[in-house]
Image (cartoon, rainbow, N blue to C red; front, side, top):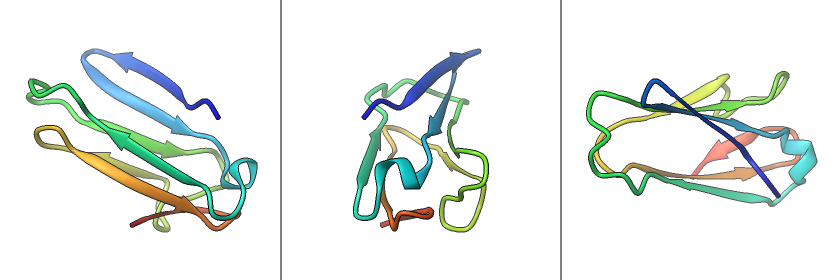
Length: 79
């Protein structure tokens, strides 16, 4: 499946499609391969009506951050 990616003012914003589109048991991994992303964040946002660990978005910070998400078919969760 394809995830939308937009780079805005050196920040990265990722919109995760609905958990129901991916289905229960789906896994997503986001990894920043750019070591020099100083002073900017990667913002991962759930589609409208869905959540990531009960919130609308999740922010990755630091050098080369990563996150793993799984879907229960209704929402996304960090693991």
